[in-house]
Length: 274
Image (cartoon, rainbow, N blue to C red; front, side):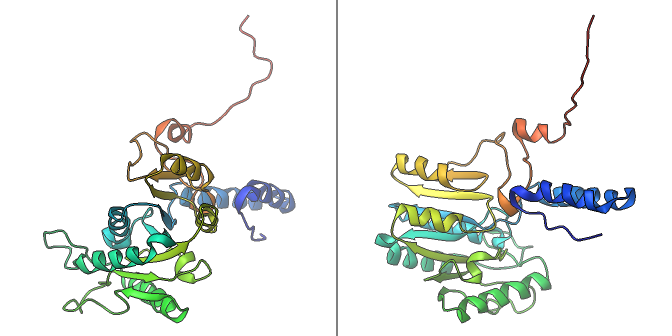
């Protein structure tokens, strides 16, 4: 069976063409199963490096955004790993992120307290270390953390809370879901530039907007290509549909749309109650 590239709006058309080419029941079933497997993996909406927008925002939002990235050791599908910052508050933002990263404690998961633990496996640890080094090699400015383990935690897969400044969207750390406590800070000048950077990603689960201008927040939220948008830390309702755009998923969880995922549509011709 020919491998089928399934992407964006063409995914179902591509599958339909592939089925027509196959020509026998066994191979058609294999194509069908491939799509089902794809749907099962993607529907929850994981694999999304989310973003935070700081549009003329207070610096308190910087701490909230950085902690969202570092919390759970960065192992969250909706962790905002790219922080887009207006140039007018860019340097102050970097200083604040340094301060936040320095306060984040790393320790054993078995201990009580407000600290972060290790990442899930050796494989994940090595991936994160490789990407941190990649960020350094590509010219991003390391402002907190870095490669290696935190002092005193040589045994285990512990990662330093890490932050890069002067990141651009061509760097791998800005385009890859690191799934670790690694934050990329990207400057912008205009609202249009911020939207362009935010949407320039294969993922689209959740965006965060931080601004004191509600009209601006609403305007930007409409233009962001993601399944969810959180304005000023308001959060989403428990019954809001959860899911993403692009590589971040097919379908939704929760709410009416989540229930509809369990339904199938039937069309009947000639129905007559008489």
